[in-house]
Image 1 (tube, rainbow, N blue to C red):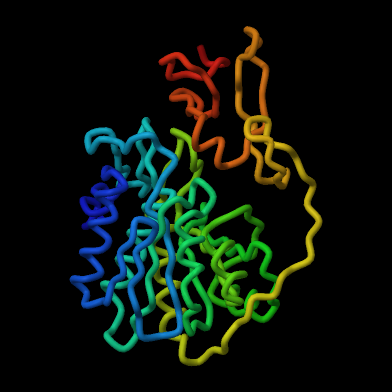
Image 2: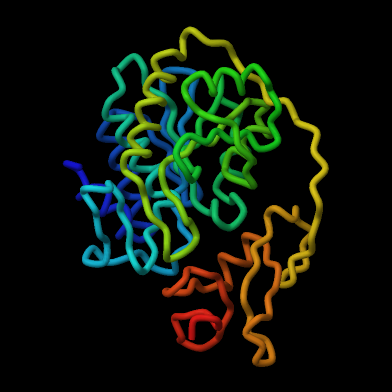
Length: 303
């Protein structure tokens, strides 16, 4: 991987450093850029927008010396957490912008606050809707997933699947906010990371590059396809109350977090994504989430 150095720089940068890096990159590629504290938007010339988020769940980024790259297995990881969710998505969009011909420049959106409820996406969704055929987010784990959340447009699902993706189910990402607000269909595509939100997170370079190549073909086909509207799907999820903030959320959104309450190492709570990002730690041994006021880096079961 010739540009592993650039990928590592994204992993090792604080959020404010990533914002500057992303804005300068887009300006260098002659994009007209709007840079706010909530998002960075670059105006393209085709009816397609690429989206990724700049924040991660890590309290601080890994150091360069703690990131490892297995050139045989084509896997990158760090024992302190990687942040590939979603720095891998940012990197992929940069690679796509580098590749795009002048007449095929997608709109680009980099957000903040995705891990805490899509704050950046909420502010961007207040803007006037763009003239887009659809939106692609690069913020999904795995190899070839395509996730549409509550958008149920069968024609759009078939179209995205025709590029080699398989429909799967997901909880939330920026397009969960933007697409219903604007009435435009969107999809979140696998970008190669796995075990996200834990110290076990890793990035498969081959899977990331496979998605990049598929998106290249989607960009090349943009003038041959239709506009896809957002169609709200019918769903009836089970609901749970977050044990921390007491908000009502879908059961599938909740994460089980160890508490060790009253000395019971088997005690757990249900937490929503926002509370997980705010209060949980991640065991350096097994990657399990836990809540503990001490400086212990292992969960209650691994101590």
